[in-house]
Amino acid sequence: MAAMAEFIDFSALKRPSSPNTALIAPDGMTPFATPDSVAPVFTFPVAELFERARTYIEARKDWRLVAADARARRIRFVAVTPLLKFKDDVDLAFMPHGNGQSTLMAYSRSRVGYSDMGANAKRLAELIGALHLP
Image (cartoon, helix red, strand yellow):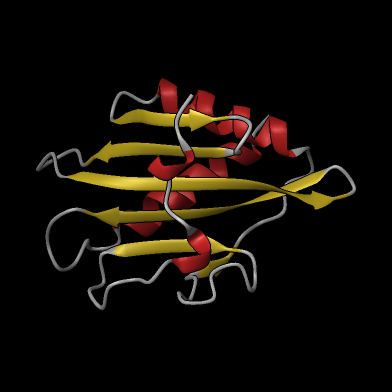
């Protein structure tokens, strides 16, 4: 289990001016950072969403799970870009959305470079798509 200090604080998140990050969050959850899109609502409970994400991340050869805390509902992983092998950091926070539903916050950012050519946004969209699958 990872210590909470290893995860970013979405409520205090401030994005850099460079276009090399992507953020998905429910309205009002990131007061100092504007999300690129509103987080989807999943039709299953938060514990299942967490497990689906953890399982998907662990199955990817180009993604490395760094920390997963089921109690805190948090995951951090590193994604390695295929061509140049850049390492990008990704943080996920999962939360209930009522009536057995769930949602998440996701922040993906490049360690180097000014622009990511959309890689972080594409990564989050791919993850979100995979989480909807049975």
